[in-house]
Length: 141
Image (cartoon, rainbow, N blue to C red; front, side):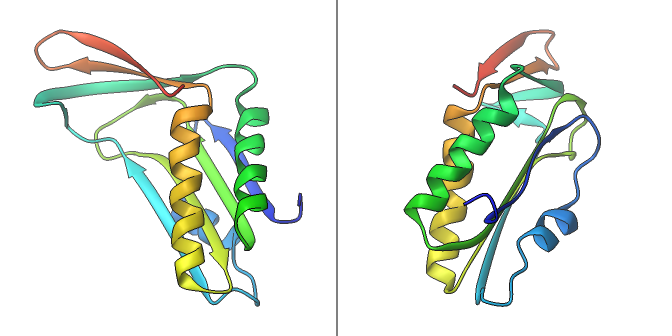
C-alpha cells in the first residue's frame, strides 16, 4: 500500500498543483482527480483578512492513516496530499490532494473521500482573523 501513497506532506512553503499531479501519474490510470483548496476572502458572510494553519506533531502520521484507508477502500493507482501550515494570504493554496485510478468515477470518489477525511480526521487547525477585528479557531477534527 505504501507504493500507492506517493506524496503525503505538511509544509510551511507554497504548494504546487503540478507536484501533486505529477506524483499520482501512473500508466495504468485512466482518470486523475485533483482538488485544490485556496484561502478565500470570506467565511460565513464575514470578511477574512488573514489566516494561519497549525498542526499537531502527529499530523503526517494521521494524514498517512487517512490515505491508507482511502487506498484500501478504492482501487487507486496513486494518492497524494499536501497541506500548508503557517501564515497564508488570500488566494494562497492551503491544500492539494489527488487520486488516480483506472476510471474517472473511481478517481473522483477517491479524491473526494481523501479531502473530506483529511478535513475531519487530520489534526490541523485554522485560525481566521476577520476584517472586523474578530477571530476564530476552526478545528479540522
